[in-house]
Image (cartoon, rainbow, N blue to C red; front, side, top):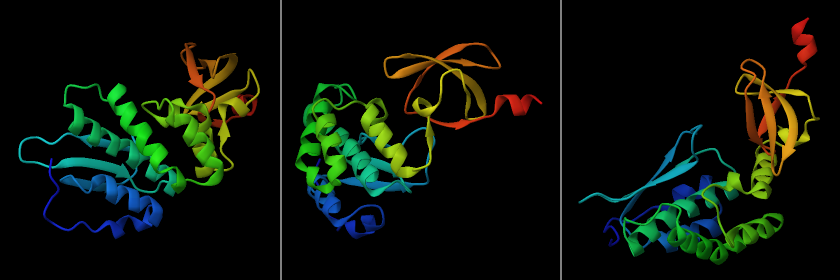
Length: 209
């Protein structure tokens, strides 16, 4: 789809990412007619992409309030959807081989944008990018620590200790690869929870007194 005839003011992105990142965003989006919308933070997603219907532009949304490197990574992810659907057709899988190929290419092309310690993780991730950075344990931990350096992660907690996620209390049991078997106190049901999941530690015994 051809670019809009209206000038795009990319400088508005400067509060969300640095100039190097904006250079690549402008380069990648220049050929297309699109709307880029910054949303208030959403619990269920960091960004999304909508394919254009007849007579409408591509639409990308990303959350405000993310660290610049995560904001750029998220926007790169969504732009990869736009390019992949435009180049290959709407019939491809959203996170299929076409998207992976485009996303990987964009990540390697823009690797200079990222901080030195993050470059190593991005280069490894770019070889076979997942649908979400959450699925990459190293990136997940990096951004969890970046956004909240004092955040307790599930893997930091001792075995058999209680913790909370969204006001639900669990006990951490044995490890199963990168995840942990956890049992919910209220239902006695077992769940597999990622070791990099942010948690709140609770003193079970004090609460019971």
